[in-house]
Image (cartoon, rainbow, N blue to C red):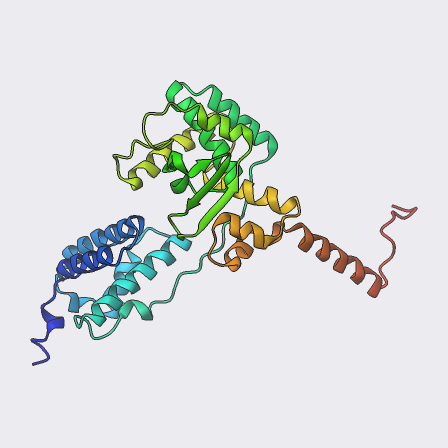
Length: 308
């Protein structure tokens, strides 16, 4: 009876299709569903190579082999494993699997990437590259996009899909796609002017509204990477514009709680994990603590000695 149970009949392909249908019914964001689709394509390709179409064949050892076939590293590998755990938990709840083998696989180590804001000189080089960009249509949009992201802290996906009606009287009011949090922030005149210079062809600044949002983000990411290369700025990527916005605020003395709200983070812990080292008040306290330690240890004055 156990051999003929539902877990022995369900195929991997069918389970993936049922999960996707359920995710759409739950209103999961399209960006997240696309990530699951990518995972499912890889899982089905792996199952075909191993000749194991049945879901019940995904034992702990087989699931480990699937994980080992990934090229993802660090944080992206962690996220992918979390997606796999979620899918297999759905299969357990549906009665197709007796247990969740992905839950027993340890998350890979992921070091948080260093936060590197653009310097003033690098920003000048990037804006100069915008002015010299060969495609005039993109030239106007690129400058507006760089200024928008640098002065609002928006993620690339939110910035390139920004509807025109989200900016009124010099203020941006938007519900972010990733976290669903509201961002309400004034924009400087230069950014407003650059956005206004974009021809009004659709209800968006950087999008026709016809293509998939995932395609839109990939296309603009490609254009921005080309821009950073043309500017001569090494290690340039779109998220560094968000970092620039955040670090400038923190170094100006804005509280990390306020920065978390402006970035649309659900929890201040996320902001602290990335930007704690840039909090000016924290840095001042650390330096004061170090100086106190000098006195406690009887360290000589920092003045150079005559024999130096």
